[in-house]
Length: 249
Length: 249
Ligand SMILES: Nc1ncnc2c1ncn2[C@@H]1O[C@H](COP(=O)(O)OP(=O)(O)O)[C@@H](O)[C@H]1O
Ligand SMILES: [Mg+2]
Image (cartoon, rainbow over all chains, first blue to last red; front, side, top):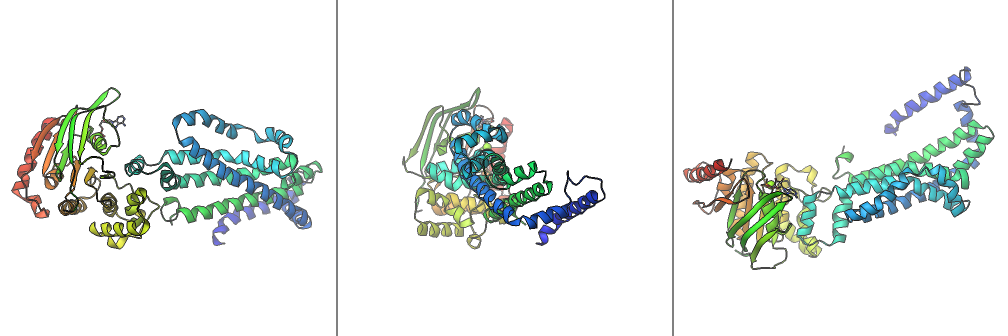
């Protein structure tokens, strides 16, 4: 709780400043709602918003889990040879460059309205950093240690599980941290077009000019992003605290 | 002497990297149980030679004959730095080779413990590499190499990064271990003092093409301690090695 304090201060300052700017008439309330109005909406529409939050969370978390598993597995596959990397890495980059908003309509056509589209969108938006970071971690495994494993006749699965994956763990976790936020964005984009959740709340509120409700939903989406980020930080701390400088002290 | 060392015969070994011929037509006979030091200017191919002997890289031509042949895992390799697995405890690091060779958990723990005691690390088994000094890490690395009871121990400038007093202690310990175990040792170094202090035979390589500049039997007592370092006998041997090194420098 004490560690959250420094982050709470800018939030409070900006909130209070916004409130003042809107009330004093510097910013019109239909463009930026005063934070007090957002809070009221949050309370008033809580059942609807909370249900949407749960839906979005499910979509984002499932999409994130799939890209964590799929991304690590794909990176392991890519790391197996330089030829395989040349053949397949460009397609991984596709996930990085594809504008998720542009292919979301296709996802709706393929997966229909609902959770599957949302999960697919979260997955596509978040898998690339997992692949890229895992691959770079695996490829930078200490060559002396690879020699050592070879010297003792280690099988390739022993080398993978006892050397390459643990050695890449700091970078895998960096990839997952980035992927968490992207999965939330992906889920919301998916919901814009083909699902129910915070994304659809935003979309509907927008057409009704309910900026207060848009803000309330966006706020909840960022809380979800933060929660995912916090979860990965805890995992990272548990996994690395004994040996990696990034998690010591 | 429980583990006899292996004998080695290198004949007309050649190895090039692209246009750069690192080792050209090198022949060397190493007697079973010998402690051989290999000296040479930096970049002359000492590490390459050691990797060829370890089977980590093949020669372009020439033959390497080990007697008795084909014993699996009879080699051990110690690198210039400790190269431990930072996510494993000292004990788990020392037991790694046995683990990769498929020795069961109880036996490998017992053997790793015994070997750690031999290098003076009995109390450190549950610590992580990040919590150790450079000298202790190198001791773990030595224990990891010795745990399989190798018949050929290859060391590539292992103590070069340590402070002098730590290096002196490890030199003495290594020499004692060699006397106790009777394995064949090839110790690569660029330190004339260290080569003369440790070995029974020293080979100085030429700067280019990696021929043998000097092959000298060192006339020093079998058991060695730090008193030897200031003795006239050692000075005589160092003088001879220095002369050969200077002609190459
Ligand atoms: N894998 C490699 N690829 C290309 N050149 C190499 C490789 N390994 C070593 N060399 C070159 O071979 C020469 C000898 O290297 P090395 O055996 O490491 O020398 P030393 O251990 O005596 O310092 C150096 O010039 C080095 O740059
Ligand atoms: Mg070298």
